[in-house]
Length: 455
Image (cartoon, rainbow, N blue to C red; front, side, top):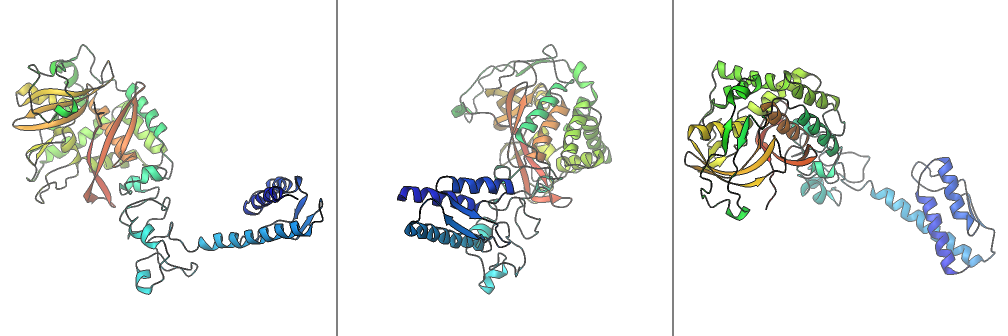
């Protein structure tokens, strides 16, 4: 037997020895090992420790004892390596970070192991340096000691590690995978259901100056006219969802660092907005149906209450004051650090421009859509404060805006979310608010907006 033939036999038998499978699969693998050189492995059944049980090895083609010994030596070496691989699985922190001492393992992966000097060799890399990563942790059980989480419920509680969507399956609370394809499919369904969006006869815009990304910070007024040339307020603002949006937009103080306070009437207006957009429209009910089937919410009441909290719950952006919320930041807009922060709603833009409080300068992006909704990235001055790029979905209904941002925040918190509108991709960037929480550790919306491509 030539050495190349011996090598082939070794490779084929290594495959047989290291691969588990059904009886039919094992039989086929034995045939692979025996067909070329008639090496027969009988009753190859790994025992419970993974040790191959070789009851008979026999060479029927050649009587060369040297070659037979070479094969036996190779297989013996393989058994040793196989044992080493199994043993090493007990010496790793993959999937074990933060848990208590377990005598079933040869080393530990919790903070106490540093004191008792019995940490696994990869404890630093996996558990300490990887504390904010899902590397090696996908699907792990909840552990309150972990800084962030990598299980099927972290999306619901908005406490996933930043790389969860990249490294693990992105799931709803019930553990049902929510794929990018499904998000695109439901966004197309919501797009088709947006019956309250503006038509070309109800809304006319004049984008005027288009600037390069390098010019967005120049604070130059390159557009002499308004962005919104005409809006049929009677047709649009009389609709229940538009009326509900108008009622809540004027409830905020745009300056951060000052407490927000709401009257009973204003709190009722928040309730009305959530109910009108999500419970009283076919679009909102479609979003709930999708999240319900994926196990994110168990009832419509839970869905509506969670939206109210994640969007309207107050938190502090400045000076420890309860001065902000996801809704105020995204829909109404704020001023922080001497510049406009947030502000991603077209209706608010229209109202402020109409009142003379907002001056449109230019745009750096205009989406590929030829009808509403469209997407733009705009530069403008809001009563003395500049916004370098304020992106917004233009001409959509309030329920569509609210649904798109909610869908993306719930399924891709702190990530880019890829939607499809009329066959064209729209990317929404979401951010979680990590400094405070509501409910059982859930995170408020920090921001969400169309991620306009650079030009």
